[in-house]
Image (cartoon, rainbow, N blue to C red):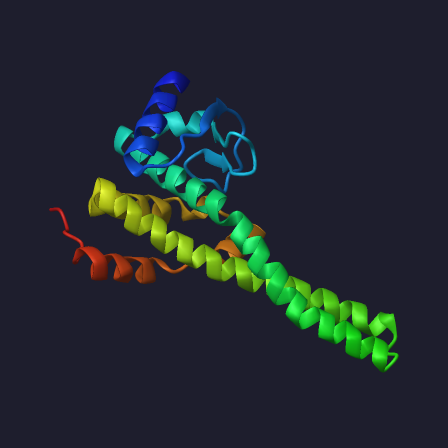
Length: 199
């Protein structure tokens, strides 16, 4: 795997999308990251970790995977603080009145704490789900806009072919928080016209 070439191509793609290029390093990536790429948004500067299996992909799929990862990383990184703020605000609006009423009516903490935690988890999951769906649609649209609809279609097909690599809880997590392939294709069809099938 040629890390210098990957780093150069990542910088080129980042420039074409008008986003900050991550620092590219070799490293271990979870198996659920099917292309062998992992973007760390909280590091400064952001880091794109690349595993050796990425080098086994055909050049077109490498390009598509890098484009999607660069755009996704930038969207998640730029929106992270807004999402945290929105979640904390909405959670506070629900939880503080609940805690006040519990204290006022002297409800035991053994009852209040589980309700509080359930609200916390449900609120977090709902916020994350709504954000993830929105970001996935934006990634598809932005990559199709800059690189063409066929690149997004190719990567959707790649995801379908390699879906078996995502297992267990992570699979359930992705299923719950990601739009379906049909929903993504419908959005792309609306924005860019129907997919052109090659013979």
